Amino acid sequence: MPGGRRPRRPQRGWTVGTAALTFPLYAWTLDDPALHLGGGTLGGGTLGGVPAALAAVVAGIALLAVLPGLVRLLARADAFLVRTLLR
Image 1 (cartoon, rainbow, N blue to C red):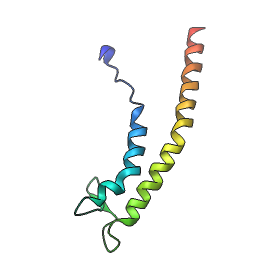
Image 2 (image 1 turned 90 degrees about the vertical axis):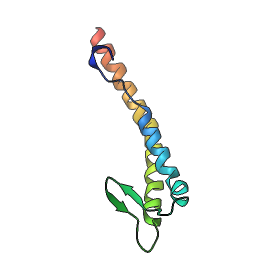
Image 3 (image 1 turned 180 degrees about the horizontal axis):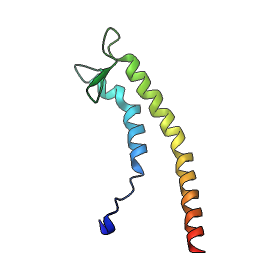
């Protein structure tokens, strides 16, 4: 990477939102459908991961709904910064 700068990764938000939205389909194929995050387990127990799956779907929908506005806002901020620096 020239100059030691890391490239921007705008696709991460879309990937995380899509993964969260499709988590229940993936978990359905597993023997243990609980959501495992960093050594902790969400959704294990009597309901079999239903609350974690529902939370993942809601979070995925919310993230995918917010991302277009966030990307638009960041693009405007970037354009403003470039215009300001070029004056």
